[in-house]
Image 1 (spheres, rainbow, N blue to C red):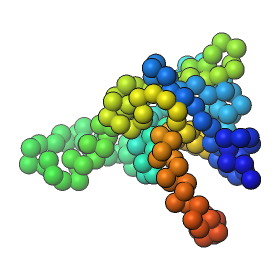
Image 2 (cartoon, rainbow, N blue to C red; image 1 turned 180 degrees about the vertical axis):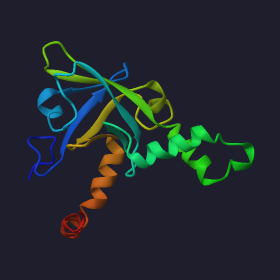
Image 3 (cartoon, rainbow, N blue to C red; image 1 turned 60 degrees about the vertical axis):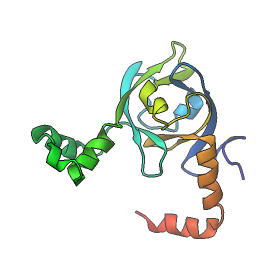
Length: 172
């Protein structure tokens, strides 16, 4: 069974190892990028959203889920005051401050797509500043993990893959 690093992935996701350089750019081969439905080579330059996902990875999605967009609208209409600094709205504002627009551009020959990662997610530790990362792709998202965090996650999941598979089938 392939783990994705050595060949084609088995299942709905794809894993690749990529090295982040000093320039804040993630480059993916077109064959890998084709696993993500919203990465379209016909659109030479576009944007997506980068945020901290539930799993702890830095996740790239086409657009914010409606519940996050709705909460942002409420915060814009009713700005936070000092007295609200410990409440749920302030917690959401802190989380939303960690959401970035990510520029997507295809190389002229369409052999690779580049995603320009803002410097701040790297500076605050959501991503390593450079070096190898694990990139997990599905039809709807891209997750970028430090190699150490990815290994820790997968090592934990590998302790009981049968139960994991059964639970995955139970979810809608």
